[in-house]
Length: 232
Image (cartoon, rainbow, N blue to C red; front, top):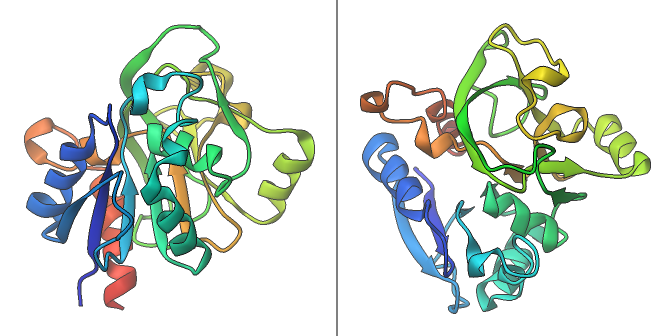
């Protein structure tokens, strides 16, 4: 049985329809929008916190959205083992909500970055990456001004120890040098999961790399992996 996806819509979200389109039209999944002021998750099996500029990114990116009524339900859902994906601004919201460790700060360049980048899968045993070939380097876009992931040494050691780093920025050949890091993120981190493996935060946009008409489909592999984890 295919899972039902719920895409949360905050004031300022601008990738909600991208996620809906990718899931509905490309993946063929059941999907619904979830308004941020509601508390019901409408029996969703997977929650998507999309990219954008929730509440205009005032105060801090994701800092206000984390207090939206629906986030109490999302938090409880995640704590009970429900699957949640935060993309870009959604990742920032997960950090602010305490569902993932660390913080997001301004890009090292202090400039907004919008371009295709390459990703290496660091943990291939998650529900989000199991169907990705071991040697596959993903090409997906980023679009953010606050994508510089930062955490203290203790947190970083915990991430490493528990295999929570899922994606790293690399070259097209998988090299994790600083020059291939678009935002200055610590250890080239592009995506992490929680200790239970059911909450993923990633700055790149897989939903923008699903439709062949766009010339890139590597993002679809993330959703395909997740879909298959429910079917198997």
